[in-house]
Every structure is written in C-alpha cells, then in structure tokens.
Length: 297
Image 1 (spheres, rainbow, N blue to C red):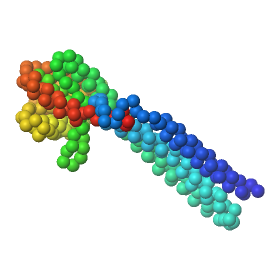
Image 2 (image 1 turned 120 degrees about the vertical axis):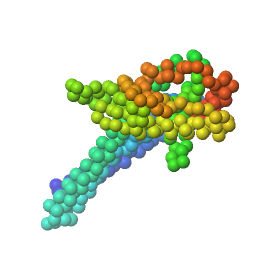
Image 3 (image 1 turned 135 degrees about the vertical axis):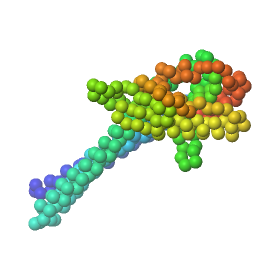
Image 4 (image 1 turned 180 degrees about the horizontal axis):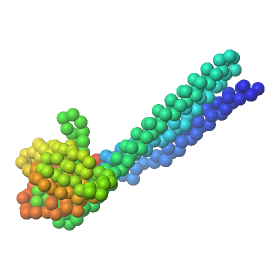
C-alpha cells in the first residue's frame, strides 16, 4: 500500500497548485475592476526614471512567476516519475536516479534565473535612485524660469532609448545623462570616491570607460536634430554627464561636461542665449513628447 503513496501526494500537490493559481489570478483581475479616475486620452508627464520603474514592475512580475515555477516544476519533475514506480518493477533505482537528476537540474536552472532577476533589479534600483537624485538637484531651476523634463522617449535608427533629463531655459538647452555607479573599496593608497575625466574617458578607481561620454554626446545630437526637425531652429545642445555621489576631477575638457549632482544647477545657470519665445516653443515640443503616462496604465 505504501508503494502507491506518491500518487495521492502528487494529485494533492497538483490540485493545490491549480486552486492557488486560480485564486491569485481571480483576485488580480478583481483589483483592476472599475474605470480609472481620468480618461485614457489625458496624459501625465513622465517622472524621473519612468522607464526604470516600468522595468522594475516587469521584473517583479517575473520574480513572482519564477518563484511559483521554481517551486512547482522541480517538484513535478520529482513526483511524476515516482507515481510510475509501481509499474517499474526491477527498475525503481533507475527511475529514482532520473527523478532526482531532473529535480536538481530544474532547481539549478530556476535558481540561476532568479539570480539574474535579482541582479537586474539591483542595477535598475540604483539607476532609479540616481535619476531621482539628479531630478531633485534640477528642481530649483523651475523657480528661475527653466523647464525640466524627465525620461524623454527618443527613437534612434536601431532602437528606442530615453533621455534621462532635458532642461531648457534662458541659458540654453541641456541634456543630462545620469550614471549611478557603486563604489568599490580601494586599498589605503586609493580613493574609492574619485573619478577622473581627461576630456575623452572616465577613469574609475579600477577601470576606464568612455561609453557614458559617448552616450551623452549621442543624446545631444539626437535632441539637436529633434528640435531642428520640429521647429526649424538650430539650437546648440549642451551635454552634461552627472555621476551622483562621486567626486569628479576634470583634468581635460571635451564636449561633454561630467560632474556630480551638487554641481549641475550651477553648470546650467549662465548668460541668456535663448529668448522667451524660443524657450516656450522648445518647451511645448518637449511637453508633448514627455506627456505619455496614462491613468489606465
């Protein structure tokens, strides 16, 4: 009689899984009942790191799925062969070995997938915090006649991307690229909070990179072309690269100006180069592109 014990265990596990999954789906749909407070055609401006927040929500859903699958699939792989043991007389050991091997492989694969989601989540959260820190540093500019837009959608030749922050005001048009990066502990002779810029590349405590500088340059070119296509205006776009929490030491100059968030307001304020009409025209185009958030989303 004990040889048939895996059968009711497997059936009980399957029924519990189906019932629980059905209940979760039911309550998830029930919570979305009713109409949104405003119409679908009424949009809100994008907030700092809007696309990162969307990706974090997607990762949360993936984590829930992987958590569920990580429990269900390995157990299914283990239990289903065990239900066949009564028909496998003389080959019970082989079935057990295959079942255990399948369980271990499935468990490891799901664990690796969850590890990847955790890693992506940590990166996106760091990026989101960096963009929020820069957005807070840009906030005082609003009282000085500037207009600040966050996470502006852009469309390149190969793929879509986002401009972290765009600022337009009397002193010009600025695109602000944010790069949040964790600090790695150095030895006694090293400074783990300093990044040097030689005019072309960033020199971190243990590495060197130019990707961030090139991205800021590309963003400035894209925004310049966008304004020209929409308004027929030839407006210079100043690219700023903001690295929150780091001390940026500039030993050279280039088209891109790197700095930390405490320096960004001063870097933008300056002599008047755009008249009020031009600022308003650019602001209206930026507002149209950044007003994409729906109450029904």
